[in-house]
Amino acid sequence: MVENRGKGKFITFEGPDGAGKTTQIQLTEDVLEKRGYPVVRMREPGGTRLSEAIRQLLLDPSYKEMSAATEALLYAAARAQLVNEVILPALAAGKVVLCDRFVDSSLAYQGYGRSLDLERLRMVNGFALNKLGAFRTILLDLPPEEGFRRSADKIERDRLEQESLSFHRRVREGYLRLADSFPERIRVVDASGEPESVQEQIEKHVLKYLTGRDPGGSF
Ligand SMILES: Nc1ncnc2c1ncn2[C@@H]1O[C@H](COP(=O)(O)OP(=O)(O)O)[C@@H](O)[C@H]1O
Ligand SMILES: [Mg+2]
Image 1: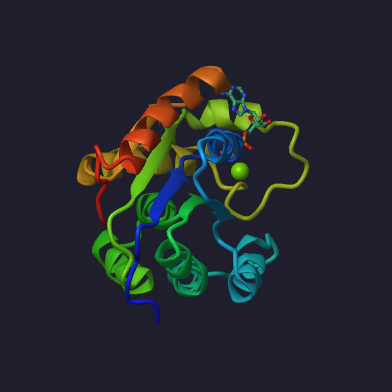
Image 2 (image 1 turned 90 degrees about the horizontal axis):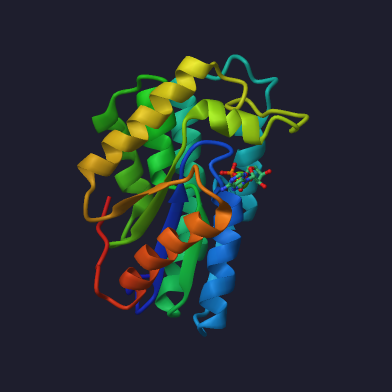
């Protein structure tokens, strides 16, 4: 187990489907690499052999019987493996780690979306996060209708994407409450503008964090 997190920095990107996480994480990676930062990018759930196997279970629409608790524990298990196998070693090696979804997705989707007890979810995820210290979270905020519109041409929707509009409204509301609960860590970015203007806002938050002017916060 890696004890020392080193000089690395950890940045997570959150928000609903279609908010632009994948688009913006790529733009952020390009900006940071141009500036000479050693960047590692990953997505959740996944990023290790075990976590990818768990991802298949989680997103397969045929598992209609999956209970909310099972879903929450599988996400946390995939996360625990990613943290220990990939994220902590990368941080110890001084890398900037960018992650497409992380722990706030669990609180937003399983907590606010599926009404699981938030304190229990926090405990389970605190266990999964192990020795991960302060980090930065960029929350891309967008009404779910707009997210659906942006990804309307997507042919196959996974198990969570198939949820109702009211579910996705609770998720968005949950994300905004999380931003209130973790003001040191989460920065809310209006994701409704053009990709370039969204990127400008993200870049400001990210550079402040990387240069130590804004230390981020823990979970
Ligand atoms: N700011 C934006 N305005 C309009 N469309 C966007 C914007 N950002 C991304 N898109 C488009 O919306 C879709 C979803 O974006 P994506 O980055 O995959 O979101 P996510 O990873 O959050 O689901 C893609 O087709 C992408 O090209
Ligand atoms: Mg994406």
